[in-house]
Amino acid sequence: MKVRVRFAPSPTGFLHIGGARTALFNWLYARHTGGAFILRIEDTDTARNTGPAVEVILNGLRWLGLDWDEGPLTSDPAGPSKGERGPYFQSQRRAIYQRHVERLLARGLAYEDDGAIKFRMTREPVEIEDLIVGRVRRELTDREAQDPDFILVRSDGQPVFHLVNVVDDLEMGITHVIRGEDHLSNTAKHLALFRALGAEPPRYAHIPLILNPDGSKMSKRDVGASLTTYMEEAYLPEALVNYLVLLGWSPKEDRELFTVAELIERFDLSRVQRHNARFDLTKLQWMNGEYLRALPPERFDALALQTLRRAGLDPDRFPPAYVRAALDTCRGKLRTLTELPAYGGFYFTGVTGYDAGAAAKHFTPENRPRLQRLRDALTRVESFDAAALEACLKTTAAELGVKPAVLVHPVRLACTGRSSGPSLYHLMEVLGRKETLARLDAALQTIPASAGSPASP
Ligand code: GLU
Image (cartoon, rainbow, N blue to C red; front, side, top):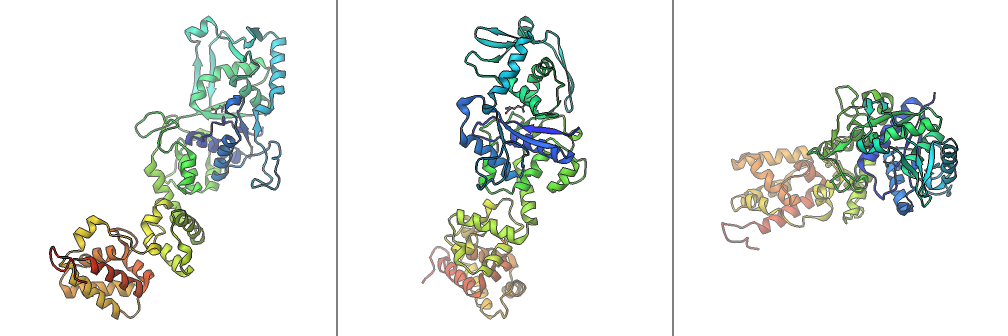
């Protein structure tokens, strides 16, 4: 039997990281088994059904690369989502729900009560065979023991979640319902409805929740909860996919970095973990850094330029070879692209100020003549490349009887305004002799000649 799974979000205007992971697990399972991945927007709660809220979900899935199958053709075949199908909207499927309700009514499995339609729920405990959670026996709560029946259609004609969720899973031939564990408590109702509709229920697989680092449940307001944040902060989608899949699934291999193709090959429900997963932003950032490092240079450069422009820098003023060389010294040093403007912005802005703490420490009267000496030595370096610059700095330090670090720190500060950044010799090479000397001269101007008195012009 061909696997058919679905992601069934409600359009709340927000795609939670847990929802994104649910979508990913469904997608991977479909791709792994050669099945179908269906996208269904659960928008019967019409008050919340807005176009932009749906777009947030679609854009998030597109960004992650989770393409969905089937569904009606989209209205704009030439638009950005050209040729894309679906999704299904529950708000457009009222007639289908109505038909099933009438069948239940006709067979006495549902009844009218105060204008609403209620389901005649089983009075027996329900056994759930969950693919992840295992066997769960759902006893009736005290309240349910009194009256386990529940509403299918409200008195205003609005079908409720349990009904539309089950009818659609039935109509769409869903074979596996992979969803968050918060829905385990609904599953007894869903199984009973399936049986009442005369259908074999799908297999259920409830995946553990994503918790905050402190173990509390991750809500909408928590840091990192919204997928949009990662899109805005220019994370790499492939890094987020890799990170998310490990939140609750384990490949049982001694490594953590997997391409999407490798994930598709390996993903299976049997290795979804039972326990809740804790969200760890530091690990995600590390992983993103690994993916940044491994990017082909052209893609890294394109993303880096976008990030710099967005930060208000103007890298396009500079010769392409300069930009490429500058970005080359940053690649592999960043965890996220948003770190780039602070890390390598000095290539494109000049030095706009000196880190105050570092200046107090390194722009000292004793260092002034040392820096001056290095400046003069730099005018004589034949080829202004990293190896020659390193040799020049080390020789000068030896002549001065100081450790290289005594020069390295003030020179870095002079060239970049900061106390950390790309490899010093490489960044000087990229800046070139003229610019490096100009930056050293500008710094020398600000260094006091002797304790207390500012440099004479
Ligand atoms: N609309 C439900 C949700 O967003 C779907 C639950 C399910 O996957 O069955 O939680």
